[in-house]
Length: 156
Image (tube, rainbow, N blue to C red; front, side, top):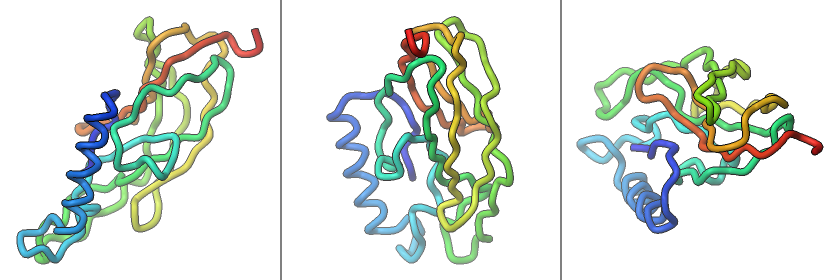
């Protein structure tokens, strides 16, 4: 099962990554025949190479654009060979929750492919309050988040 995107220590990220590698090698099905990717929770990241890791906060400037990657946006989980294949979630709405607890709609993404994934550019609003923030996927549980530290404003 894929980890949730939450800030954490390096040791925690390394431990989680090790567990996932073992799960991928063994498969998540009861007979070992299925892929763990089929049962992974959605995740948001700034790099496809970190999709299996707990995300540390990324520092971004208010008014700047960033690339967000999402993985495993599917309904259902194929734990056994007899389970139906997961189906793609056609639209994922992304929002920014700022340090002052305001939610700002950023964009909608449209997952595709074997990893039920997407790549989108989002702009952090120029008037976003500096401090801890998150990009959230606004999906029912399990909601994925990408932790940020906003500085700003852009260009100042």
